[in-house]
Length: 438
Ligand SMILES: Cc1ncc(COP(=O)(O)O)c(C=O)c1O
Image (cartoon, helix red, strand yellow):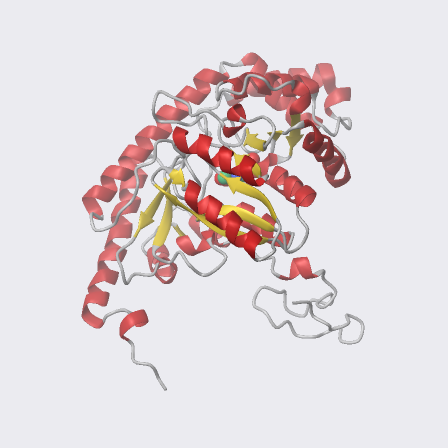
């Protein structure tokens, strides 16, 4: 709902909502799409979770200590000396051609063998890519079908374009094709325009599950049948703990899939360099949208990433990351089995996250302040829904803390959960047992 208050008639109007700055003189002037913007629960947690005494199982930050920073700094300094006039200059809105060529080597690992450098568009992180594709495809009220639960950053983008997100369900094998089809049919039956499916097929954030290969083919078949675009968001695909990489949806269908991936998790997020691969019509418009949004992605960042790719064994680096994250995942899985056997979860086959189902009667959001007091942080499942659902889950990240810290974090969390369970046993849950007042 828009607020009719005119800024000049009531400059000191009091905000009526918790997520507006007090006494903001522009209150009442904002576009309706800005009204619902708020810090994600993850960002709100960031300050407290990053204190050293807190074991943070909250953020999705990759662990970067193993990167060859000394050698890299020298090579980047050399690159700047020799190609400074390019690195410090504006660049192409589509992105640097050399980097786009190098990206083809990376996506080949996921079976994308037919793409050309001209199909690739560089973005400021995949987050920017999600913004661009939503800007291109969606008018207010249009429907995006997304997995349930959903990546919180995508939810923020979809909301800012005033789209309607309709959930399709997942199980241990990822998105359920029948649920996807039902969501399309249900929306169309109500006269709504379904613009795309947003899916994170590999090592889902936050659900940790991976779409089976059989389901990939079926999802694409349904998308083609109903002429619904598939937006495949795949930052974790190369971080598999098995000796295999799943084929990208884009490798199975070049015409109906827009593919996004990023250097954030496989190298490092600080350069904010990611990419999209899109069919020609959409790619053309993505470049125009990039131009109108940022003119061009940073040459400096792209050339820094290329310096890394050209001079280091990046495949070995990814191998090392896989090994490290796998050990951390094992440590978390084992600690959960030891300390919290009353919870349930799917052990991930890659990526950064475990999606933990907590015992009935507990509320992950309400419990969070007590966990922080016990010096452990997680993200409540409610962050991954727009509807208030999700309090029966928490997302635990195993990417950043060491194995020892993970075990300690889970131990601390178990003390909080044990206390909560004892309280529920004594007094029952507020939800079910508190008598109504009237
Ligand atoms: C599923 C998913 N998509 C996109 C992003 C954003 O990545 P980037 O750092 O490239 O903007 C993330 C980051 O955590 C993510 O988990």
